Image (cartoon, rainbow, N blue to C red):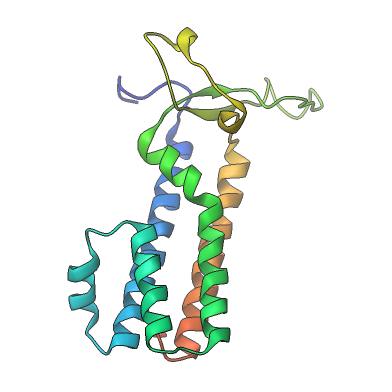
Length: 180
């Protein structure tokens, strides 16, 4: 591990972090593909036009276009449902990209001593830090910890959502069925 990586972050954490970021990128690419299909443009042109937009801005552009082109409301609702799942995980994605992580301990956690050699620990993002870790102040919104199992479950949810979203978009003719 490099000197810049805290001891509490191991390769498994980094793998899950990368998968979260990649899931968001895949959803963004699918949104761009849908924009291209709805507008009649090629995907490469849409990617060039929207590459500097944030995830939220791409989502807004997609819905503005769907409404402008008078897409059926049930399709708009279904697409909104698929993208709403990502709203739940946006704080995690933002923490991965913009926070240093420290070790955290989930509260009220008990386990049989034969299950593990030591206490189950979790990691949490540090949102605001002074000169040292002791200066860290967290409020109720910042009290978020992630165990490896929770990160794995989050990644699985994001990946399943993407597959279902792609299948839906392909089924209504707004995406290629064979794309990744």
